[in-house]
Structures are given as C-alpha cells and as structure tokens.
Image 1 (cartoon, rainbow, N blue to C red):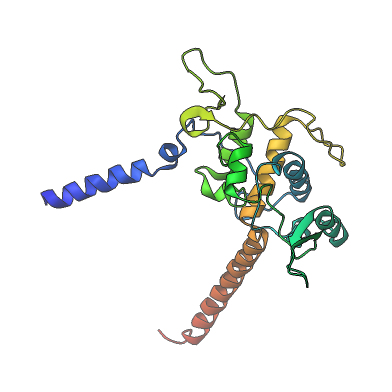
Image 2: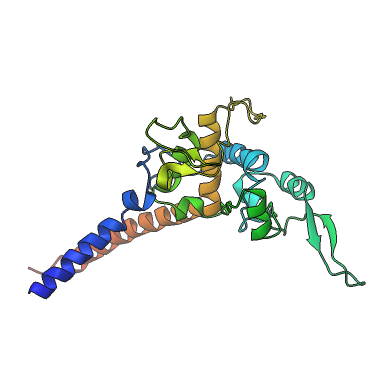
Length: 253
C-alpha cells in the first residue's frame, strides 16, 4: 500500500509539472472568445485573410509556415487567382535543369510558402543566435494555444525595476522566463487592411492568431460540420430504434 501511495503521489506531482500553467513558464493568458471555439464555432474568414496579410508583411521575414502550400490558401478564403498571384510573387529554387544547375522560378500553387532562411545557421546568424520557430503548429505546440499567442503578441511592456533584462532580450511576462529575444513585432498601423479594418496591435494580434490556428488545424471547420452531422444522424437513428422497439414489443405484457 505504501508503494502504491508513493506511486500515486509521484503521478500527481508529474501531472502538476506538466500542467499548462507550469509549462508556459510565464503568466497565464486571459481566455479569449475566439470564433472557432465551441462545437458550432468556425473560422472568421475575413480575419484569416487579414491574418495572412499580417504574416506576410510582418512575420514572414523571420518565421516560416512550412506545412502550408499556396493552394491551401484557397481553403482559407482566397480565390484561386489570388492564391496564384501570391505564389507568383515569390521566387522558388528549383532544379536541377538539363545542365545540372539549380534555378529560380515564380511560385506555383503546388509550392509551399518558402521559409525566410535557407537553413538553421542562416536563421541564427540573422537573429543574434536565436532561432525563430516555424509557426505552422504554434497554436498547438504551446500551452493555452491561441490565447498564449495573442497574449504574447500584445504582452510586451516595460520591465519592472527589480527585473534585469539580458542584452538583446525584451520583457514579456507571458514568455517562459519573461524575457524573449524577439522584439515587439506589432505596432499600430503596421499594415493597411483593404477591408477598412483599423490595424491596431490588438486587431492584428487577433487576426494573426486566427491565421496561425488555421495553419495548425486547417480542416477544423470540416471536422466540426462532419461531427455535427454525425450527432444529428445518431439522434435520429436512436429515435428510430426506440420507435421500432416500442412497435415490436407493443403486444407483450
């Protein structure tokens, strides 16, 4: 019994250590009322488009989204022509050609969005030794998911007097250790939204978080629709079974 109690105690300690609050390392972010939350929730398509714009104009210079191809942007809400234009706006290394040489060409729908750096060493060299993570699965890889991403992007502030900031670091209470190498990426008016939405820090943070949630789970809307359809089918089927059962056993007393 003592051995069992010890094992259970260790399990409790391990579960607490693995909890989101512990894993996050910083302050727990406030819960956000995302459009995709809940059984009936879905992505906000205009927000996805704005979030993609924020990614391309702000985040893509340091961070990649390696699992996303330009053709996937059609599922996000872009038209095929818009997705083609986005692909053709970048240069993709291809080859080898008949001479055995690599060459550059305009992007195609089948190409994945290219990373900002050719390799890890180049990424570290350009960022003072820090390695900017790929953002494709960021909302799934971090505790508190999209709430953490939003809190991090809007959480930069002046460090308290009793906190010593290391050279090249920035204070952010939501980051593990509360010091982060990434400088504050968003500022009011950093982009211009064609739909007239005001590009405040909070708005851009919401939109890029929507986009990064989509990159991590692009089939979320389809999965929820299928799940809802299955639930409705099961309710109807259960009703039919109950009706059949009552009809079959109606004369049994």
